[in-house]
Amino acid sequence: MFVYSLKSFVTSGVSSRLKRCLSRGFLTSQQTQCFGTACTMEYEDFKDKRALVTGAGKGIGRAIAVKLANLGAQVYAISRTQTDLDSLKQQVPSIDTRLLDISDWDITRKAVEDIGPIDFLVNNAAVIKRTPFLEVTKEELDDQHTINFRAAFNITQVVTRGMVSRGTGGVIVNVGSISGIRTTNNRSCYGTSKAALNMLTMSLAHELGPKKIRANSVNPTVVWTNMGEGGWKDPKLKAAAMAKIPIGRFALEDDVVNATIYLLSEKSSMINGVILPIDGGMINSYL
Image 1 (cartoon, rainbow, N blue to C red):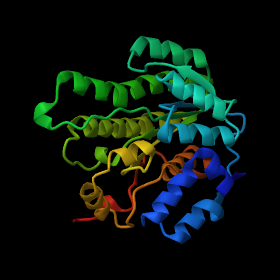
Image 2: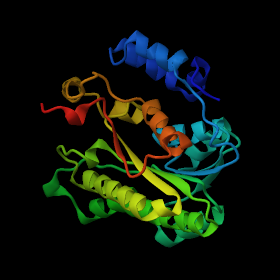
Image 3: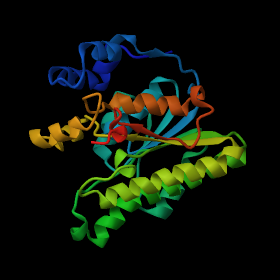
């Protein structure tokens, strides 16, 4: 049983963010009540299955890893920060944590092969640096494309080869960004890396669908994580960004988690190759 309760939010640290969002007008009391008590779905797909989540040390990746573990999956969590992995392991002892710099192609392949069979893959790891196009360096371009796209390509190839050889199929969810669908200032590196990830998603869906492997991507707008809050401290900048979102709030971690879990589950068994915005309708707005 997949049940959202106030207790689970307290455990995951989301309740405090919900309260802040309510106090700042990002959520209505009815929406907060839905998050806290009324959003109940049944997921039995994950029990005793094996899931790999990259960028699982903090933020969205960590929330996805914790949710999958709570749903009964054996979760393998990859991060390049040991302190994040230590705190994750303390929070959910059943999660198998792996310290890994996924920018290293060969070491990453060996590490993922050593994990063994994977049923669910979530490519979440990402980096961002907001630099005007005319000032971008080769190193900055390489860094963002290596982590945001090439590493996902590499890991997915290893995982899906195993899925195909076993004949079991599997599911992939790539965590993209609205920046991979729509553009804005200072996102030339980040946006193109996420657009590449979305094209990879569609290519995987097309090529691997006949082998019982589905692939989709989730593409959130600003997500109100601790890191997200830090990037939107300017009231004018924050107001301008929120004005473009018809429902009038930024996304929460659980908005992304809910969509990811759904796409991983058999409840979405006919959904393949979808580039799903999680943006409150932002990309539909002309102004």
